[in-house]
Amino acid sequence: MSALSPRLSAIVEALPLRSGMRVLEIGGGPGAAARAVAARIGDGHVLMIDRSARSIALAERNAAAEIAAGRMSVRQSAVEDFALAAGEEPFDLAFAVRVGAFDGRHPEAGRRALRRIADALTPEGRLFIDGGTPLRVLSLPRPRGSERP
Image 1 (cartoon, helix red, strand yellow):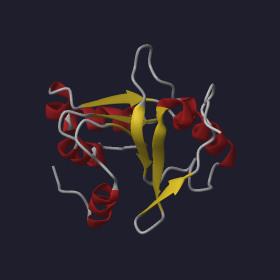
Image 2: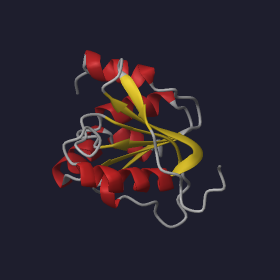
Image 3: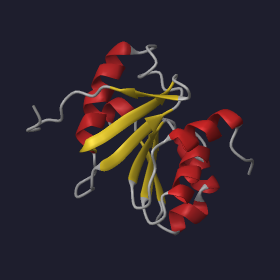
Image 4: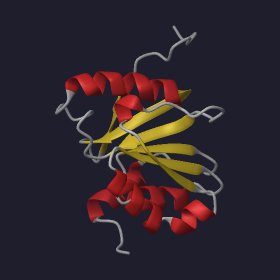
């Protein structure tokens, strides 16, 4: 398995990761960034989602050790359809690289996706996407039932 590209490495390095975090990667493809995140969050957990069954199968092969250790899991889901599983804890942080729902290519899917991500994050959770230096934070709608002003 190859190392992260310089661009993907810069993105992972820019994420405000800490030990014990729950991280959601959206559109993770073969799982390279998720594996790098899993290595940086100690006893935390990263869930990588992707709409492609082929990408999920590849990530499962590439991240077999991380999955077996319980530091990573994968799930086939389009971001605009994503929801926490029954009993699943919310995520502290989400990130996406080259995901059409967030880069303007699919605006309606983007609106639905932002709601889904807001509902899957803790109240302090943030969504990072590529396109900054190297990341930017997207504003999220208030989660349903939120008491924040």
